[in-house]
Length: 171
Image (tube, rainbow, N blue to C red; front, side, top):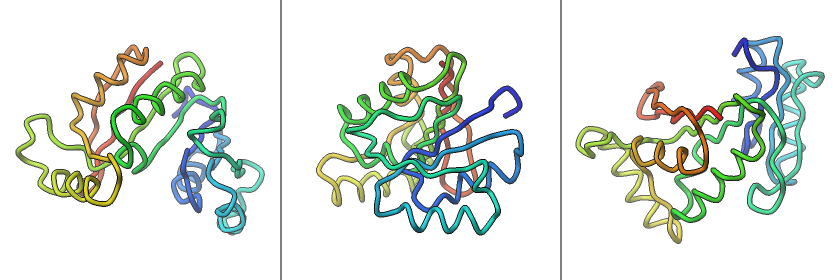
């Protein structure tokens, strides 16, 4: 995080991820970007950690509004909600909003490339197909391909705690 100064958690809800990043990296300023109904909860939560000078809430709809111009954009459990066309549309919006050299962190229950090991990811994908009009979880290689297609020059998959992983794209 040393090479970055700003970040946004798009669809960041209450601000849990943004708060933890800000607490760990005092040189960063952050944005929680989400729908208006979430704003009071997020502002109260951010304030409870004394971070209102460095983390702020910005109201927006990630499909209809421009994303904040920052160095790092995070989407946690967002991409899997949507069909392929909408996933690619969101990735393109992220690419547009990032500064040169910026990073995109897409966190989901990423399925292993062979589609044999991450049973939780496969079951989550089935769940998304049942609960949403077109959502599905994806394997790392597919997401890396989508990121390259959008213009990202470098991609990788990193395992996180539990069943989640993140796909990282560098602009």
